[in-house]
Length: 114
Image (cartoon, rainbow, N blue to C red; front, side, top):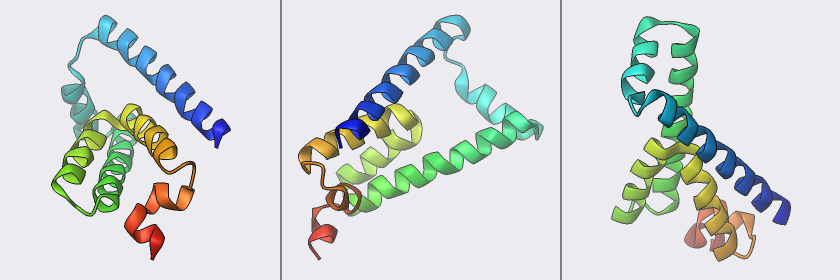
């Protein structure tokens, strides 16, 4: 579990540093570029559409894990818009809260107990 937590920390750090560097160089106009590439039907657009599918699945999993509660739905929206920085931090926190019990991390306490 410690190796997994280290991996999460490295991925979080790399993506945050990279994102800050890109934002400083190109500004915060991500959505126009993101959806513009999809509309242009290019390989960049294909990648963005594929990535949006992963973000949507991540958000749905977070909502499901939290029983579609109001808090879970809010976290799902955060997962959808903040991607890997959110997911790495969320999984790191869950790994601490569950003492590394992967079943509890992925399913939540209620489903893992069943």
